[in-house]
Image (tube, rainbow over all chains, first blue to last red; front, side, top):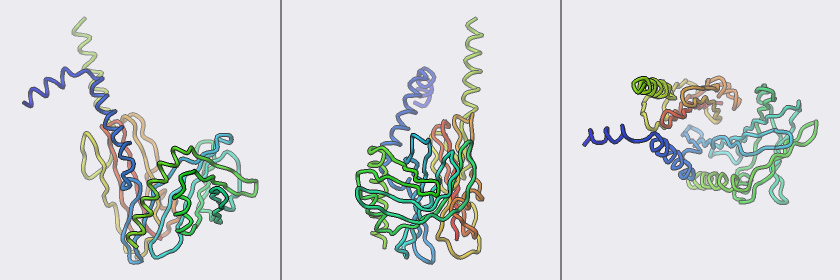
Length: 183
Length: 105
């Protein structure tokens, strides 16, 4: 039986092996709604610490700048830490970050963690705090919010595609539900 | 001529297969790896911040990234480390990712 399989594998054209590899990769994408790959949690003396893995979808195509953010939440707190990396060619002094959802604005001052360079761009790493309920409202929305980086040199607007947001917000929404269940 | 062709195919296949993307992990599998494991624990008591850093490898030909503990701690402003975990992913040796999670305050 095993020999038969080896014989078949030997005759099998490489295109079938490649197709099998692609199928496995596609299955991975189909399972994207499996939230376990998108967050980690750890028990500590103060409560359960949740970390939602970085999201890279917000961009500004005109200035070729992009934003990557991650979310950390400790169950005893009513606020969420949102650490973000903003990549831009321009030199700026970031003051705050705003999520605009329809007519609602969720604002937080941004505290500098560090500034570095990545290839030709500046890498601005900042930390902001939002209320847990505000984050819940943002990710409950199926329409994508607009993120504004407010700096001394002006505002930088970052957007995402509705399809990408819908997929990601569904995952974060499920994680928030899980957090609520465990509170 | 046929023999030379065969020899070339064997050499090509050997070169391709020997350059599989590999990733550091306590458990290794050829088809698929998705393993989380501990790296270090300290005596510090609090952990309410999490920082990550990662490095990736494509086809075992190109590997880039900074998966250091320092980079992960820096990304979340962690000055006192509580513990460090690692997460290794490998798909068919085509794509590998090594991620470090640093917990602390």
